[in-house]
Image 1 (tube, one colour):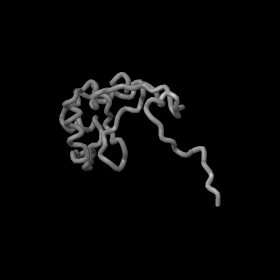
Image 2 (cartoon, helix red, strand yellow; image 1 turned 135 degrees about the vertical axis):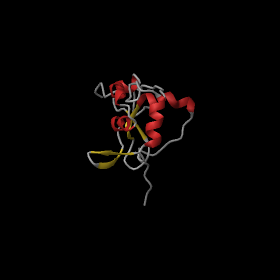
Image 3 (cartoon, one colour; image 1 turned 90 degrees about the vertical axis):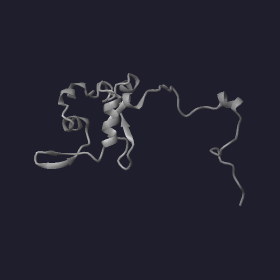
Image 4 (cartoon, one colour; image 1 turned 30 degrees about the vertical axis):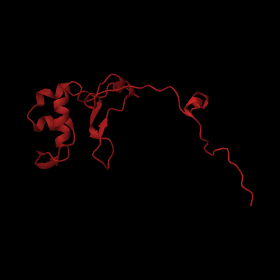
Length: 122
C-alpha cells in the first residue's frame, strides 16, 4: 500500500514565518477587565463552579456586567455564597442563584436599582 501525503498534515515552521501563514480567524478584539466588572450572576457552564460573564460583546467592552455598579465586594460575597445560601420564598426553601434574590436575602433590596441588566445585543 502506497503512503499518500494529505494536504491537511501539519508542518513545523518557525516564528519568523508566522506572517506567511494564513489564519483561519481574523479581526480580534483584545481587552482585559477585572472579572467582577464583566461577570454575570450565572455559572459559566452547568457542570462546574465557573463564574459566568455577560454575553454581549458591547457590555464586555464597556465593563458593563451585572455587578459593575454594585462593586467588587458584592461580587465576592455573592460568589462565595453561590449554591450554599438559601432563603424561604413563598413558603419554600430555595437555593439563591440570582443576584436579586441574594440582595433580598441580605436585606438590601435598596440595591436592586444598581443591578445592571443586559443593555445591548451581541
